[in-house]
Structure formats: C-alpha cells, structure tokens
Amino acid sequence: MTDPASSPVPMPALITSPAGFRTSGRTGRRTWHEGADFRAPLGTPVLAVRAGRVHAVFREEDRRSRARGYGNLVVLYHRREAVYTAYAHLSQVLVAPELEVLAGTVLGASGASTNGRFPRMPAHLHFAARRPRRSGRAPWPGPYPNPDRHPALHREVWVDPAVFLARFGLETVGRRPGAGSLRIRPGSHADVGHGWPMPPRFAVRAQRRGR
Ligand SMILES: [Zn+2]
Image (cartoon, rainbow, N blue to C red):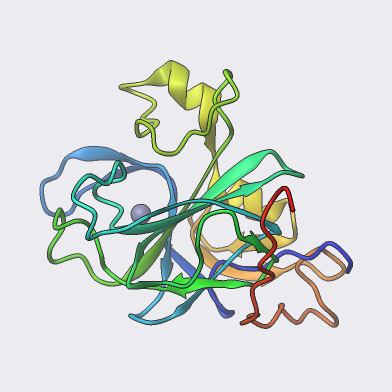
C-alpha cells in the first residue's frame, strides 16, 4: 500500500474508553470525552496514524502551555485529509514542530502527564482528531469541543477518532461502538500485507517546510 495508515499504538491495540458521553464512576457526572483512550502502559511507542506534519508540541513543564490537562501533547496536521490528530499524556516526545512524519513514525512514548490535573490517572494514550476551524485556523490549542457547552464549535471541528481510523481500515471490534480492539481490514491502507500492521518507524524524515 503506497498510502499507509497506522494504529496510534502498536497492534494489538485496544480502545478502553471511546469518544462520546460517559458517566464518571467516581463522581457520577456525565462528561464529554472527545478522544479515544488506547491501552498503553507507560513507555508504549505512540505512532503517527497518517503521514503529516508536526503542527505543535505542548510540553508539560511549560507553565504557560495552552493545552493544560493534556500534559505532553503532539498535534499533527494531515494535509491530505485536512484533519489534525492529537496524542496526549505522553511521557516522552521525540518529534519537533514542522517535522514531516510518515504513518507509523514514533512520535513519543505513552504516559500519564496531565499538567498536574489528574494525578491518579493511569498511563494511556488519548487520541483525538479535529478539522480546521472554518476560519482556516488550527483547532489546537482551542476549546474542548463539548457538544453541550460549545455545540457550534463541536460541529465545526470535532472528528470521531474511531470513525477517522476506520476510513483507513483500522476498525474497532467490540460490543460498544468505538471501543474494543482494532482490526485491520485486509487490503486497506493499514494492511502492509496479509493483514499485518505497519511496524513502528524510528526514523523521522526531517524535512523542514519551504526548503
Ligand atoms: Zn481520553
């Protein structure tokens, strides 16, 4: 496949908490979850799902980070799809803004960084996707597109991460929609042969734009 796609964590990949409304077991409150949470014990490689450019890196230690709660966050822009994808709570970041990455490029390692907001949160990967704002501006950093609080913004930018992955053959198999194991559809962008996933790529093609 000349136009590959990758799971955001190495296969077998499991979505433990899908995007959508969920009720907190702790507080009983109904909250909106914009991304899909993947099982990713501390240090799991986190992979670019499609070729793209590193739009931004937000660092947990940056006290002025405009992505507080996400900890170390990498945001990619995929020009072909005109979609941004985000990889949150990382323990390590291995890419820098403006790098061009390929599907399967290791962006960093999973973790539990949250800028101190959720100190007991277990390590996992929060994977989210957004379209550009209608103005053309990037949706990150930007408000959380909660459909109750920001319905117009929600319609403008939010992309269901499981639906986005399914476009490229990474389908979720489980009882709840959007939760469960990823399966590779044979012959899809995610199939590098006989249903096998793309192996992680450790080399980053370091092409700066405009050179
Ligand atoms: Zn999450």
